[in-house]
Amino acid sequence: MRVLRRVFGYDSFRGDQQEIIEHLVSGGDALVLMPTGGGKSLCYQIPALVREGVGVVVSPLIALMQDQVDALRALGVRAGFLNSTQDLDERRLVEAEFLAGELDLLYLAPERLRSEATLRLLERGTVALFAIDEAHCVAQWGHDFRPDYLALSELHERWPAVPRIALTATATEATHAEIASRLKLQDARHFVASFDRPNIQYRLVAKDDPKRQLLRLLTAEHAGDAGIVYCLSRSSVEKTAQFLVQNGIEALPYHAGLDAATRAAHQSRFLREDGLVMVATIAFGMGIDKPDVRFVAHLDLPKSVEGYYQETGRAGRDGLPSTAWLAYGLQDVVQQRKMIDTSEGDDAHRRRLTAHLDAMLALCETVECRRARLLAYFGQQGPSECGNCDTCLTPPQAWDGTVAAQKLLSAVVRLKRERNQKFGAGQIIDILLGRKTAKVIQFDHDALSVFGIGGELREGEWRGVVRQLLAQRLLAVEGDYGTLVLTDASAEVLKGEHKVMLRREPERAARTDKADKADRAEKAARRAAVPVELPEEAVPVFELLRAWRAATAREQGVPAYVIFHDATLRQIATERPATLAELGTVSGVGENKLAKYGQQILDALSA
Image (tube, rainbow, N blue to C red; front, side, top):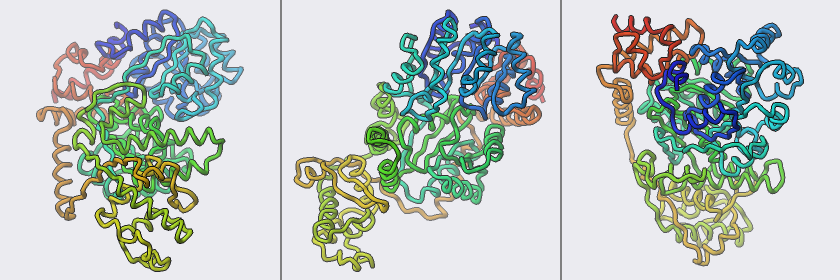
C-alpha cells in the first residue's frame, strides 16, 4: 500500500489487485484476466518494485515500449527496454543497467527471448519476476495470435524459482484454458475479474450511409474528443480519414499498407496530441495506453466478440463516460461469410471462424441488454438491464417474422426451381416489392408468383430480414457475388414448423439538413462548454491545466497522459489545492510527480 501511494499516487487498490500483488510478491505464479483499464500493469509493477531484482515484462508492443518506459520514469521508476528499434550502444547501456541492478523493470519483445544471448544476459542478472502481457497472443484461435509467445513456456524450466504472471484483457473460457496450457500455468492461481466496463455505452446501429452516421456521432457527441474508428480494409481507412478531414475533424489513417515511419509518426501524434481521431484497421490499438479515448467506432462488423471487446475496451481507460459505436449491415454479413468460405485452413478452422461470427451476429441482433449478452459470452453474469446500452435506453421490439421469412425464402426457391437462377439480396427484395427494374424485366422476374408479395415492408426492413435470417443460419450466401441460397434449416420455416422472431428495424425519421446541423451544433457546443462530470466553475481551471500539461509534454517529448491523466486534472480543478500537502492527496499524484510538477501546478492555480 505504501508503494501504491508513494509511487503511483493512489490510496486504494481495485478489485483483486492487492491479492494478486501479495501472491506474486510471495513467489506464486498467476494468470490474470482483467479488462482494459482495470489496472493490470500495477499487478506486476508493484511486485517488481518490492521483490529483489528486475521485473522482466514480455510485451509484443515494440512501438509503445518507449512510451511505457517514459510513463514509469515519470513516476520515478527505473525502467528500460530492449528491442529492435535500438542501436548497439543503446542496447549495451540498458544491458549494463540490468546487470548492475539499476533497473526496476525491463521490457522485452517475445522474440528476444528466443535469442540465446538474451537468455544468458538474464541469467547473469537477478530476475524478480516474469510478466507476460497480452497473454491471449499465445492462443492459436484467440485474438492477435503471435507464434513467438509459444516459446514462453520455457521460462519456468530455465528459472523455476522466479514467479510468472500472465495477463490479458479478454479471454473466453476456451482461450483461458489454452493460455494456461500453453504457458504451463495450470497450477498457478487464476484471477478472473469482471469484464464489465460500466462507463462504456454500447450502441449498434443499422448502416445508412455509415460515414455520414459517424460524422453525426462525432460532431453531436464527441466534438474535440480523441477516438478510434475501425474499418475492415485499407481503402476504407483512407477514404474515411479523408472524409473526416474534409468535414473539419482532425483525423489520421493507420494500416499495414503505410510505411513503418508513417505508422510510427501517426501513432505518436495520436498518443501525444489531444482530440485526434485515428482511423485504422485492427493493426492499430493493442496496448494503446491512452486514457482519454472517448469513443471507439466500428464502420464494419468485427470478426468476433473477442475482437470487438478488445477494440472497444480502448475507450474510457480513465473510467469516464465513453462510447462504443458500431454500424453494420447486410453486406457486412455477406462479406464475412464469404471470407470464411474462402479462408485458408481446414474445415475445423472454418467452423471456429463461423462460431466467432455467429456470436458477433447474436450480439448485433439481440433485443436484450448488449452488456448482459457481452458478459455472458465471457462466462460472466451481469444485470439483465444495464441502463447504458442502446437496447436498454431505447428498447427494440421483437416481432413474429415467420411469414416475411417464408416469403423471402420462397422467392429464393422460385428463382432456383423455375429459372435455375441465384441472385443476391437486392434483386430478391426488388421482386418482393414488385419493382419493375431493368434487371427484373430482363430476367422476366415480374412473372414469378412471388412478384410484389412483400409490399407490407419497406426496403430497409427487408434488408433487415435478410440480415437476420443469415445471422440465424436460416439463409446462406455463396459464391463471389453473394447469392442467397437455402440452408438445411430453411425447410422447417417454409413448412411452418419453425417460428422466426426478428428484431424490428427502427424508423428513420426524416430531417432537414438545416435542422440536423442545428441540432448537432447545439449538442457539440453544450458538450464543449461543460466537460463530463466537471462543475461549471472548474471548467476554465481544467482547460488551464490541460494547456500547461500539453506544453510540458511537448517540452519533454512524451504523451500528455504521462504527465497526468485527465481524471487527475479534473480533481485538481475541482478541489483547487493551495499547498503541496493538499496537492499530494489528489489521486494520481505520487511523490515523484509532486516534487517535479507540484509547484508549477500551484503557480498555475494562483495565476
